[in-house]
Image 1 (cartoon, rainbow, N blue to C red):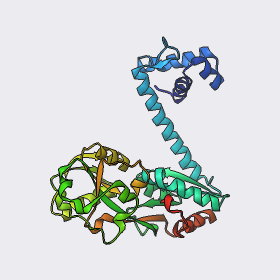
Image 2: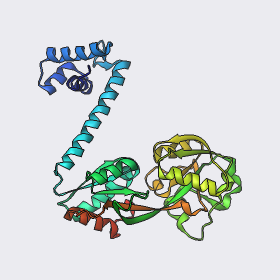
Image 3: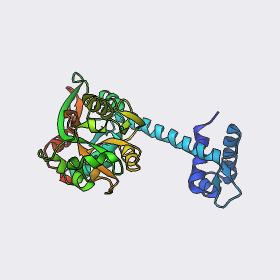
Image 4: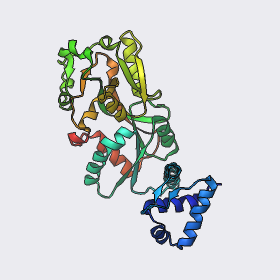
Length: 321
């Protein structure tokens, strides 16, 4: 039976690349640590470390073992965060949940600006999908969720934050671009907001009916919108790949694998390139609201109220969004 303590010992050896250094870190004797690692190896019936090299290296089985340990440790940290929150250990702290895109690109800058104005307050981020965010919000693990999807208004109070535009990204080498010169947007055009000019023309999606599509996986709001936009144009997209993350979809499109639906703000957070051509889409579903949700009838703490007011006040520097 695999034991968590033995896993921690193995992980320490992996981190230090040395039994002696790991033993010092763990305040164990080296023989005791070696015995614990041998026991872990006996349980899986294969060596974890190649001891013939200096520093020691992982075997192929060892690489899988370490990946599994990291998943277990991540789950344990999430559990600790969850139960610390339930225990009320959040004084002076705002707990905010959001999808990976917001946690990686938007909220760190927002939080930095907020804490410049409120240096006594702290903001913690929880990255999760929409379904898990609803659970965390309902149970009180987080104070707010930032989401583009509609939640149950009987449970959650919505507040409008900002609007974003969904663009179609097409690999530059695709022939379909040749006859759409009037609608084409470059990377710099999107980053500079040219597509937001009401006078700039939007393209009809029927032009791209024969192209291969990259979609986010079912359950994501952008998956539903993509299908609706294509349906409104009179076709079902030929989906060649479904992906978990927006950023992955962007890079796969850059590699020429298919056309993708991307949020316009992404171009402010990735390196410029000329491998994609962008199009403003002639469909109302290509514009969506980003909302801030909190539990209905919940009494917000002073720090949570301050954070909500800050988000809605428009005091953010443009580069934070």
